[in-house]
Length: 155
Image (tube, rainbow, N blue to C red):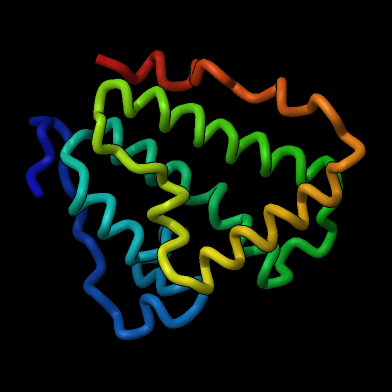
């Protein structure tokens, strides 16, 4: 898909790989920290630099849920859990803001957890974090409900 911005160049995307959907982590052939199948989907689906940048930026937060499932965050505690949940809430709030301008934009969460195993890991580990945070009422008010981060990026 052609990006509708003269100054935004589409990078060279990694080709499809037979193992893209076989594991929770998928494949990252270009070692940029973003799963290749997700990265390709974002660039193929969206023609707005704003949607591309937001979606790719969300990947690192969403990957944390997979990292919990894979045991890569052994010291998961209330502070770490709180930050992960707040970041996911911010993704949700900003998605709603973007949908005001781009009505067919889907939450990066839906696109990132794109297999049954990934969706299950997302549900399981958000519940795990919620269990850790059950005695932390009200922390969600710290979320950026108006998505102030997007205000500077809008044209």
